[in-house]
Length: 216
Image (cartoon, rainbow, N blue to C red):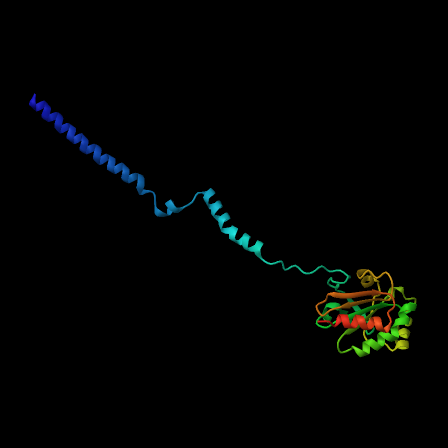
């Protein structure tokens, strides 16, 4: 009887030892395949969320950036003067934007226009008085002229010395919505329209336009 109890005790102890060893071995195998890199690797869904989080600051910065859009372009006072390019009497192309940095006064006219002829002597005088301060440009509505020679005759008659551009297809007069002539448009050095006058001006009216254009 004592021998049986002793044998049972030995078997029990051996079983406990075997069970303990087996448990430690199994636990070691379950953690051996999990590297630090695999623990830190996010799932596909987590990667997407991380990327979205990284993009949010950029979106917020963009939203907070100042509006750098340019002022509206329109042939009306307070708006940026529409740019254009026309040939002068010598065939050279003149672009309005190339005249930036100095006030510009544009006068739309035609040789057959009575009011244009009426104001031209005073306009020529003003162009001589302010030639160092203001760039004067005449735009002839060439598409409305019956003969190109009439343009040259008009310029010689009134001794016009400032540049004359030829609107041969009426594109610029349409761009500036010229419904009657003469039409005079004054533009500041930054390219913004200051005044727009339709109809013949006298010397006093012209002087007011010049002074308003030269205001700082």
